[in-house]
Length: 387
Image (cartoon, rainbow, N blue to C red):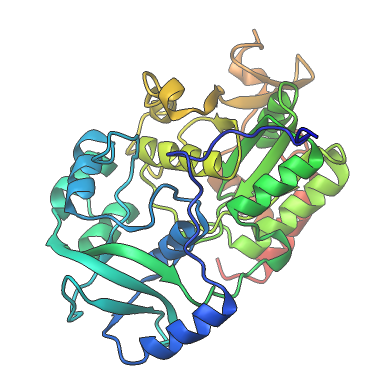
């Protein structure tokens, strides 16, 4: 009898990576790791280990070697020619490791998370990496600062995850294999992913619902790995998503799951990484709005959309490019410049600073900007957080 499950988009490179071992192998691996040299992982590197091991960064099976690193930095491709936009490397400043050895990857408390079979230890070029990947050498850029602070010495090799860090959101934590199984269970073939590191406001909601008109389902996929200090904490964002989904989204059309990656704030290059990862989670479509993965004024408003020109079909993900959306008082609804003919004076638009000031004062922003239930979650969080 033929398989009735819908066919999902293939993982990037054709095979979904799994570098997570079973309990018996993990126990043996942890015992062996006690006598290995140790590499302490940064918060970003812990996120990378999880994404590699679970297949979110397929086809990567470990941290990049020098050939892949240089090819990705300069040409946005692995040495095989496959599109890959961001270097995924393991800084090893101060660690006494060499090619041909196996090292334990530990967190800041010394707990072993994984091991790496080191194939190469090499010198990267952080200055060139910053210019090519982040498009700036400014040390005020959080992504550039992280690259420069980590140092130029990298270790490459396949990893084996022995002990998954405890998830902050167990009920919403799903690996790519699990989201793929969920989509098939739901009978979905076309799925649109939405990347966010912020609470969902009315503009986000509008884009998602427009996308839902043309696909089977939505993967609301907030990033919960390492972010910069002034971003809204992940637990607050998750409460916002839950109240929004309960009241304003159709039942059975949305899956809420967390993305364990770290933010790099690399704008266009990171948009490609985000699309590639969601392809591995089983998504056929990916929403890219204005200033995706941006920070400050380092990138043009729609640079993250333009980078997909010429690579979208090869990447194998349909990119949904959206203009800035807003509430128009004349149209009496959400719109963009593509659909609304009215002057900006009729649009409800608030700066981030203005919104934060209102929330700290216990005031809800206009409901045309934010759902009142979401605003209440943010007001409650800000009332207990120092400004």
